[in-house]
Image (cartoon, rainbow, N blue to C red; front, top):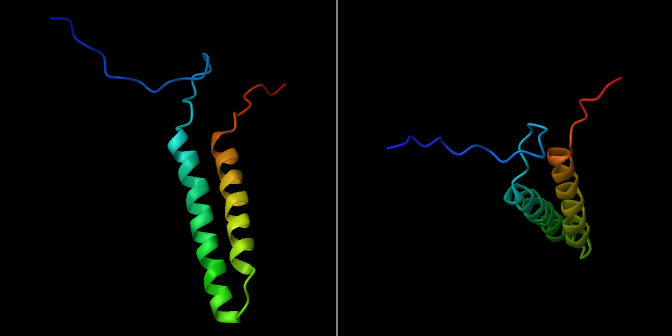
Length: 80
């Protein structure tokens, strides 16, 4: 019987870097929305306001997108 090689990570067009997992991106965005939305909700309850939950959700989405971009952006190895 022929031996099988273990599966390797998918690489990005010969650059040798693994491609990002879409579940990581999903996790960053949903956890950002959840955490900052909950923080906004708590502040709304504490301060008696009604708009901080919306601001928290928007900030969470922005931070989640930023974390996704920072994690999965291509690194430049061409420095001349």
